[in-house]
Length: 108
Image 1: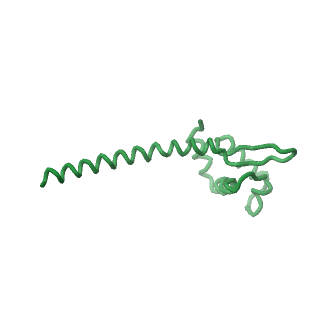
Image 2 (image 1 turned 60 degrees about the vertical axis):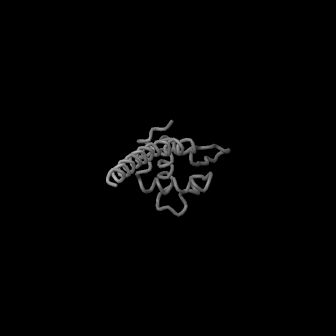
Image 3 (image 1 turned 135 degrees about the horizontal axis):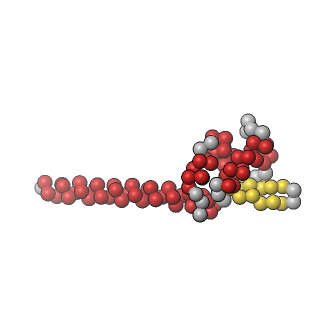
């Protein structure tokens, strides 16, 4: 399970978010990820390391190439953490709606 704070911190950097978005397209090399970014390949490699360390990216080695992709397990774990807020919000909304409906029934 990933640490949600580390994942959110990792995505807090705008350049790192752009790098992460490029991983949505599937396995990519550092060169492919850095093409068109205003960031050097070594800097992209550092951003990828942070994403990997936070559980949001994985690396697969093919010969001399390193291919990066989104770690779906980390993304699912982060989503589960965020869903906890959504569940709490929906529960609070339901309780508020039930209180309001009870008030209406009493006022009739």
